[in-house]
Length: 172
Image 1 (cartoon, rainbow, N blue to C red):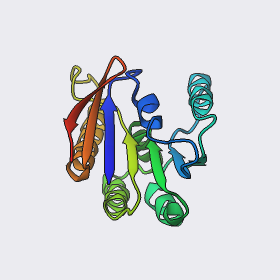
Image 2: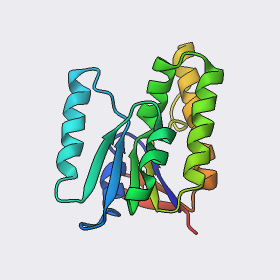
Image 3: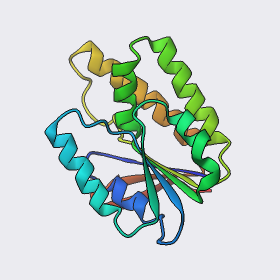
């Protein structure tokens, strides 16, 4: 079963996702962040501290999510992916051709749709703001929005975080 947790920046998405990772539950925390600057490094460290005390193995993978999940799925009772927002940014940076990115996205969607363990996925909602002025930002917004929709369609549960409060969008 897939649970998608979406919302704005600093809305409490990651903290809410961690509530499903009970101590003693053997889990994989798949981090997509690639520390490119000092502010992201600080954010990564903050998220690491939030995971202390949980039985989560951190796997850092900025691009090949499907490969990592398929290679580790049988070892874990739960998988948490944080986050699709940075993953799409990484895809656009490391894989400039859209057709090639689409292949990676489809591999990921196929992979998670076949999971036999609960999977919690964190992402940002990008459709509530203004239309970006530059072409690359509009392309990013469109591709992430499409990915979020596809993941939401195959998810059993979807939560939208508002100021740290989860709102149920979809419940199985």
